[in-house]
Length: 376
Ligand SMILES: *Cc1c(COP(=O)(O)O)cnc(C)c1O
Image (cartoon, rainbow, N blue to C red; front, side, top):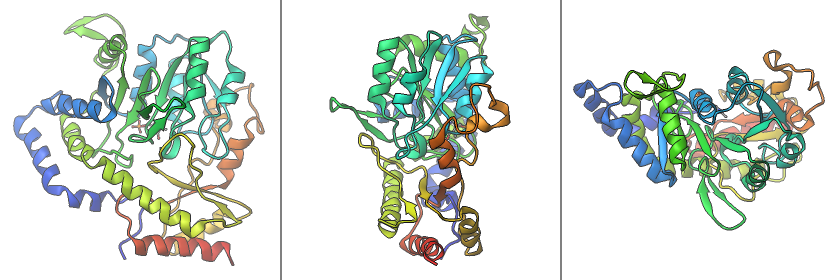
């Protein structure tokens, strides 16, 4: 059996190395490393895939969040509501812009932002909500969009972990994650579901005006060369990365199916076990399994992790510390106990290896190893 990894990017590459190498070589031979034709071509393919009017590539997912918030015209002191249980970038960009992150708890089943909790913290200062489509499935967008309409708020979807997931609205409309709110932000970090060979990110929107602002801010706030209408940043997707992503986008649905098949195997192996809970499926979203995250009940997580480690199986804790208890984000508003669901998740979740290259032997070995520890 192959060495077990959280993600296996090497095997994934080997299967399409011919196409990837050709695409990279083409960029090198053209020397158009910045804003080469591959960037536009990839953006067009992704627009098509997502069914969205504008995809604006940038340097990474964190930049995408920052640029999107700048483009929405959010000002210091504005409150932005987001989930306490997420990767730090979501809250970091809010804080970095002088906006006030207002954290809320998540749904104990889906791990995504709890719309009822959002409703409770909306104030006259609230300007935006950032739902995070965590681990590969969409947050419950219908009630969040209803809140946005009612209170005139912007919705910025952090879809770094759920590129390709479908949200099925109550009215039956199917939309790709990140295309429901005003702007979606994603990352092409190598281990994400659509990963490049370095850093990359993108923003998506159906709003022409907003797209224009986003493009301008990502390019030093300039609309015409050397004319700067606003303070911007320098955030670009390299041509080489775009060329790689253009190839890999063709396989994204296949990759999602491989992840779903691995998840289904784990689900079956762990079904109805009293000591762990398999990932719940949101009722209105498909799941692209960026992570396969189980909730342990009365199991010593550290010891289980050590047991798995001793058998050559990595397992990760996403995320070990809630944002409101992180030193950088301490705030008198919050204390230990403020967000009981997130706090419980941080102490009980474990993410098992899941990627596009898993085979039955591997899945059998991993699930058997988990079960032999928790059944002992
Ligand atoms: C990965 C990730 C980001 C940031 O993406 P980078 O490309 O690493 O900057 C933001 N939000 C979430 C939820 C992520 O998982």
